[in-house]
Amino acid sequence: MRTFLTLTIFFSLSLTIMAQDIVLPAPQRSGGKPLFDAINERQSIKDPANTPIDWQTLSDLLWAAYGFNREDRRVVPSPLNMQELSVYVVLKEGVYLYDAKANKLFEKVKGDHRTVAGKQDYVYVAPVNLLYVVDKSKETGTGAYISCGCAAQDVYLVSASKGLACAVRTGIDKDAVSKLLKLDAQHEVIAAQTIGNKK
Ligand SMILES: Cc1cc2nc3c(=O)[nH]c(=O)nc-3n(C[C@H](O)[C@H](O)[C@H](O)COP(=O)(O)O)c2cc1C
Image (cartoon, rainbow, N blue to C red; front, side, top):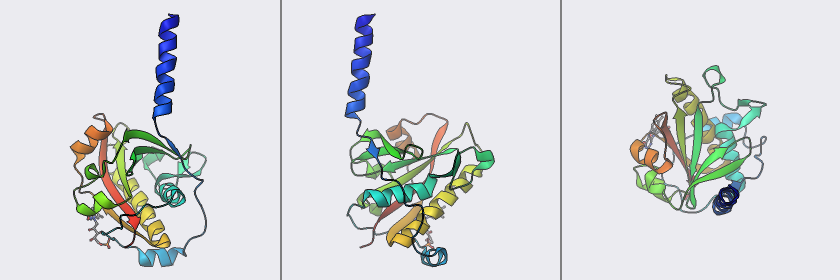
C-alpha cells in the first residue's frame, strides 16, 4: 500500500512538473479604442505575420472571448447560463485549455499542431488559433453557435482595437481536432479563430 501511494505521488508530481501550464497576466478589462471605432474597423484579415504576440495581448483576447465579467457569468451570453463552451488555444509551443477563473492555460498537447487547427495555409503560420468546443451534454441546440458567435465577435473587436489580424473559421477537420484533444463524443469543435500580427 505504501509503495502504491509513493508511486502515485511520484507520477502525479512528475506529470505536474512535465506539463508546461502557462499563467497569464491579468487581462486589461478597460481602455482600448472606442467601441464604435472598433466595430467600424472589424474585418477578417487572412494573412497574419509569422511573429509571436505577447502574453498580455493573448490574455486580453482570451478574456474577451470567454472570460468572466461577474462572479459566475461570462463576457458572452449562453442559454440558461450553461457556459457550454470551452476555448482551446493552439500556440507554436502546444495546445492549451483556457481556464478563465485561474487565468491559466493548461497544457493538453505539447508541440506545434497548427496544421490541425484548420485547412488553410494562413492558419499554420499564425501565432494563435482558438478552437471553440461545445459540451453537448449541456447544449444540443443552436445556443452554442450563438455563444460562440458572440465570443468570436469580441475577439474580432479586440483585434480591431489592437490592430491585429483575425479571422473566424468553420473550415476545420473536426475529427482531427477531436483526436488531437482526445475529445469524448459529448464534445465537438464548432469554430476556430486565427489571430496574429498584421504584416
Ligand atoms: C460562420 C463563418 C464561417 C467562416 N469560415 C471561414 C473559413 O473556414 N475560412 C476562412 O478563411 N474564413 C471563414 N470565415 C470568414 C469569412 O470569409 C469572412 O467573414 C467574410 O469573407 C466576410 O469578410 P469580413 O469578415 O472581413 O467582413 C467565416 C465566417 C463565418 C461567419
